[in-house]
Image 1 (cartoon, rainbow, N blue to C red):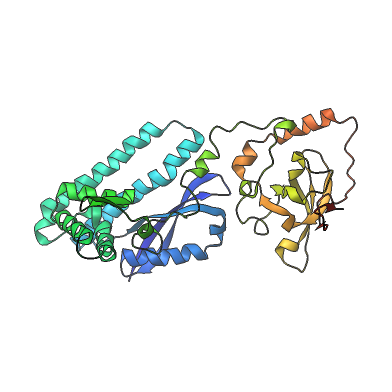
Image 2: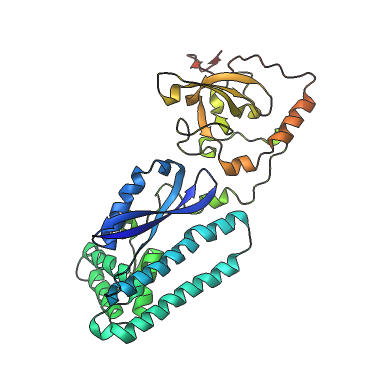
Length: 360
């Protein structure tokens, strides 16, 4: 048994940025470690607030007396740096528009060149002793399993032949094996073969992207968005504008809560009444979503008391960053002829009548 460090990237629903985390796993091989790490990730309570989770590298401290282990672990470390660049730094650069893309592209090329150099040294020293290219050590392992999936004969044999060339240090075959896992498809026996279903967390290659979430939808939430500074510009927000799974699972202190617009009673269904801040917490014995909280509207100043299950959850940080609540409050006060009176009454609908009317 050996200790491996399995690296994941993810989009932090809490911070509005891409981030990474690693889990320490005891396993016999890096391939076994990948599977065990998914179990640890699933059991991590913070996974509730992560999206676009990808497992992008496994690293370990090599046995210095084992030349193969040394080269393979060194290649894994380079891939870890490359994975962090591609899955964390580059998307964050797009979010923040920090203008480092050219530098990151130079870094990407540098990491790929490092893999090429490592292969060259390993080939000169140990190719005649049976060492396979360190840069595709893991890819060859999973490609062999993919051959079994494709079936022997035809496409399976074509992939096996390509693997055999790569093991013999054919540079074109090495690039092809590496790129097929990066792209999710390759050409075998004259036809394009896609195997995205085999790239999932529980399938052949442990590169995971949740099927219901596109890779770049998180970035798009930040791009080309204008700040909301006037009451008339406030949109009706959706559940996706709140941090996923935050209802009943997060500390609401100093957070902006997003109320389900449909839960507002008739007469109070206005965009500014979607937003609330906790002012007091009252514990009940019926579970977290039934807990009563007293909240205050940061725009109108109105107060009310309601259950957590009337809220979608905590407003996403990227949405909060686009809304100037101070300016909105000033605008609201300016159009009111008198001060807002805080009655303490509930303005959310606790029940819905037979004809769909909200009842007080």
